Length: 242
Ligand SMILES: [Zn+2]
Ligand SMILES: [Zn+2]
Image (cartoon, rainbow, N blue to C red; front, side, top):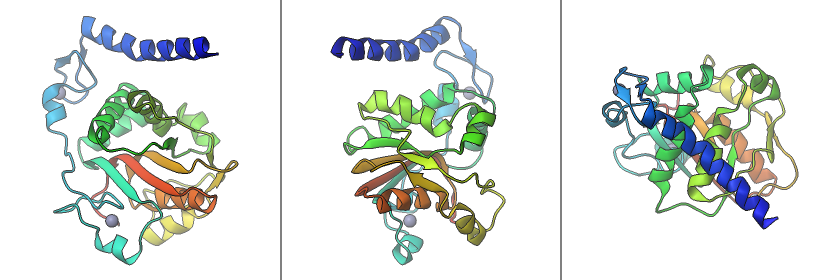
């Protein structure tokens, strides 16, 4: 069994190394500026220009002047104990995420996992990574769950377990992006359910946190099922609650 696990881990490490080796030998154009880059999908200059969030609300990750709890979270605290996000959701981050989600540019999953791992490397809980699930119909259309792709890679970096099965999308909801805040809350209500008791401590992984309604509902579902501690880690955060 142990030998089997070891060889599984070697195969996973190789799966990450082979594309990088390939890029080193055959540089690829940076997704944003076209300059040849050895580490794809972005060149160092475009990476440096990404709109990193320096201060954010510790509960919902909305960008702030300092790391203090925002007015919305003071009025209506979310179920999660902590949230972090890498970037504000604006150009060119939105283009990178669209390329990843809708054009299968999976190099971004590795890049985003690398960056998240670096951000949390000195301070992260021993928790289970749980990707925010997509409905099976959406997975069939897209071919993969973007949050699961990030969570898998992050699991290797941080040696944390990943469980993509404990939380499921029980309703296929229309896209949140075109809806008002109230409609978003109604749209997502009861959209998730837990399969069996969830892990005691969970880190929810998602690509974009817009109004926060989706992760709030996912976190509330985990909490109701018995999860005691929840963090939410995302790649990009919209700059207002909408
Ligand atoms: Zn570039
Ligand atoms: Zn907040």
